[in-house]
Amino acid sequence: MSNLKNTLREKIEAWRPRTKMLLEEYGNTVIDKVTIGQAIGGMRGIKCLVTDISYLDPNEGIRYRGYTLPEVFKLLPKPKNAEMPYVEGLFYLLLTGEIPNEQEVLDLVDEFSKRRILPRYVYEVIDAWPCCSPPMAMFSSAILAMSRESFFAKKYKAGINKNEYWDPMYEDGLNMLAKLPEIATYIYAKLYREGKRIVGNPNLDVGANFAHMMGKAKPYDDVTRMHFIIHADHESGNVSAHTAHLVGSSLSDVYLATSAMINGLAGPLHGLANQEVLRWLQEVMERMGGEIPTEEELRQFVWDTLHSGQIVPGFGHAVLRKTDPRYMVQREFSLKYLADDPIFKYVDMLYRIVPQVLIEQNKAKNPWPNVDAQSGVIQWHYGVTEYDFYTVLFGIGRSIGIVANLIWDRALLYPLERPKSLTTDMLEEIAGIKEKNLTHELGDD
Ligand code: CMX
Image 1 (cartoon, rainbow, N blue to C red):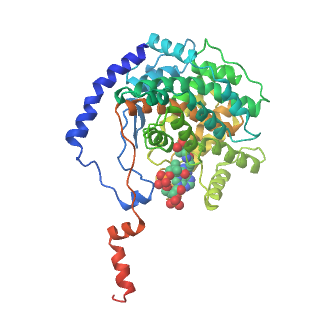
Image 2 (image 1 turned 180 degrees about the vertical axis):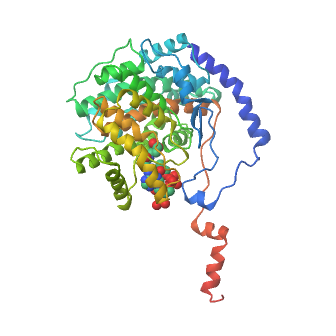
């Protein structure tokens, strides 16, 4: 058994009594009340999910296992001559809560490398898609197809003890994560490089191998590490993480749950926003004939977008109430490496203008930029200009957190998710307005 799996087994055994005691002795303790606004309004703020992988504070931003992003970037081991840490090290941290040492990360780099080869039929599934298909749909289907490899499904059929569910989930999770860069770069080559694929190099870590398969020179390896690390997890209520948890709660395997989460990530209010930002910027540039607009012109463009009933992509958030630290990590990188890029200048201007406009409009609860406002611009700068592909990159990163969560979901035996719904009539009764309406109908007021 690998060192990581041994460490994880010890952690799981130590953790289980905490969950058991909370359930058995404090199961009726009230956390929060739920309002009608929350029931209709997308369950904002209802505290009804548990995860120890990450926590999102509205005013501070994300912490992975208690560490802020700057701490994560500082503490995790880095490859030689790299500015950003190993992606594999982040997976170790999310899974165990511990910062791995160099050797622990290298063991995991080796594990990922050994598990990265794709079954042939995955290429065939991708090839079966008609030309110009959406990359996220292709990505989701390729992951879904691999469900036939699931150890968990096989073990379940054979009658595994539920206390051991997490073990085949771990195997499936690692197998899948190791393959995602191969799948994504194959889709990229098929869609945008006339099928000319660059074969992976087993001697490289995930970040460097991804850059290699994309045909990109340094520092794209660091761009990739940064990208995958900042997108990995955002606690469990966001659409992608929640979808994976929900689907996994019926004991669906990792492939089924991850494919579903990719479909949720593909919506423009969630992960697709990163490519929407580029599409929207292209419109501005077209309107400006390629010239950099003045602040006044850009402000007008933002207002025109709002007045036409559209959203400004890359700004706002359902939980955050400040600038997303994931945005700031990328902004710092951009200020260092792409400060003179015209498209970064647009983004920099938007950073100053959009929040003022959203505050003036007085609708968005959070006028500040989120992760998606900046990520596409970095990709564009390094020559990945096919912005339809950007959400696939988000999807690889997000899968790291998804897998860590799914393994722990199984380890702590979180049950089938099944909240209760009410009818509108019932809400009106709870609000006390149904009776009023009846009285009105009877002409009794
Ligand atoms: N542009 C225009 N209007 C916005 C806005 C934006 N960027 N952000 C919020 N609003 C509007 C909402 O559409 C809503 O309008 P209505 O009352 O007419 O429905 C109002 O402000 C209040 O919304 P909110 O409570 O502040 O935000 P929500 O929790 O409902 O939604 C989010 C959050 C992210 C969907 C929203 O801010 C948005 O659409 N942002 C742009 C898309 C985006 O960048 N998504 C990516 C988020 C990060 C990620 O998941 O990847």
